[in-house]
Length: 638
Image 1 (spheres, rainbow, N blue to C red):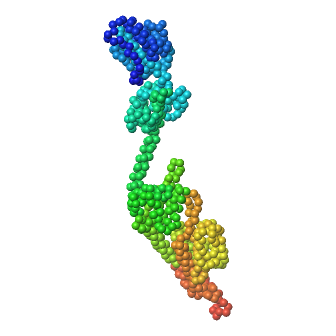
Image 2 (cartoon, rainbow, N blue to C red; image 1 turned 180 degrees about the horizontal axis):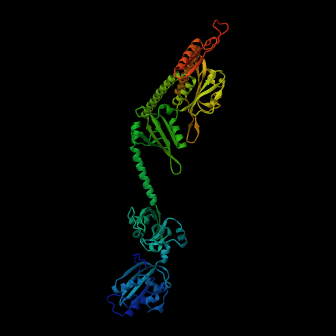
Image 3 (cartoon, rainbow, N blue to C red; image 1 turned 90 degrees about the horizontal axis):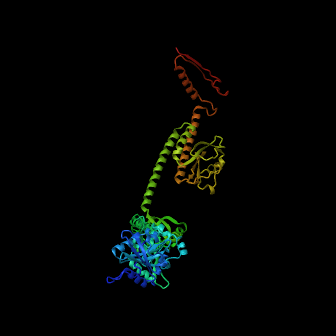
């Protein structure tokens, strides 16, 4: 039994204190009054006040007989015999309490189903009668409640929806509860029928429930957010929609309610609002960057503290103005601001470094990033623009780069000086090539190359020294295969695909330079230097041009090497002339005498050794000097 607290219509059957007739007369009196009532009237007599199973049926009016499927033949039988399932409810105990206490008991609405009793929803009240008798008056509300709730087929459809749907009567008692409501709240349909959702769900409403009901009666519907408690005690937020239900006569009989669980959505909205608020506070607090939002036309919508500091405008001065006011006149004339928005809208992002103008007209170097803002549907809603003043940073970077260049030049000059000193100290060309091979990687750290020397026959160039990742070029080639040898000047190629290449490189696709080496008008060879390819993350090679400083360094190195080789060549020539006769090419007298004295000293130095020395010289027959001179010397150590 589930009571609703709603008093049903009924009649007072208890006799007044002035009635003195017997009980039989009272029963006959009641029997004459109530047969035509639509209410069901049943009178029970409790024989033993301590045992409700001793209730005996003594009267039922026609309406009660129809509802309960009983007749006069069961008069005198006990309640336990007629309605045994009734003792599974609290009704017998309630009847017993009324008989003992003599007070009326309102049963409210309850549902009862028995093999004999038609299943339905009833509203009843129990009245005390003399001599431990009780009278039950009840009204069948089944059809009325069916009119106020969805039909069977409609109820099946409502069980398929994901929202909680239930129907309540005008007293707030549940008359329909779909399966989604069971899943959402945890209470079953049997548990909720006849209950007040306001009490069970502990409803919290932004306005008073009474006010909601007034709106419902006035407008026929209401919607809003409610907070409900589930069976496990957790609270959820629902978007609730109420619709007033009326019967055929237009009388309000209840309301239809649909609840959607928006707890996660509300939490997400709160998290989003908190995130947006946190982001707003963060953006507003940034001082080193101008962070603004633009609408689709480029008008300023938001403005942070950093924007005021960098650009000089107050928020109230700039909101609503076009962002082109930050550009120099020449950029405005060329349509650069509009072009920036167009690229950002198409590609999602636009980035550049350029000059911008402050409120006072002064210019600063800025790094600007414009990002397209789109909604969940991909619709463009505006732009976010971040600008940083990089004037000072660029000045620092420029000073640092200049210092690095100066340091590099100092290192190169030092190495070049050391190279020149060692080259001039070399006695042979082989020594010179070894010295060059040690210094070349230190002078050209990001480049590769080779030193080619012209052969004595002057018909081929041969590589004498190689460093770095030298490409597969010719190691021996003809002088005509190098444009530097042909022209007698430096040949530089920055873009191999569009320049004239030296045949000896065999199409190497790198920036390179060939510098001729010459001394006193005599060609000695070439110095070849090329840049190493730049490898990206995608394993693609890119071209790196040779800077002016590297080309100048290559020229200086070529001059040093050429001068050293020329000096070595001249030194060799002078040495030959000092020991050989210029006419005959034979060793001269001075060389012979020095050699004789050296050998004599060597022969006389160690003890226990004997040496012999023979000197022969042949002179032209036309000379007055004897044709042959022989001298033998022997010495023996004592």
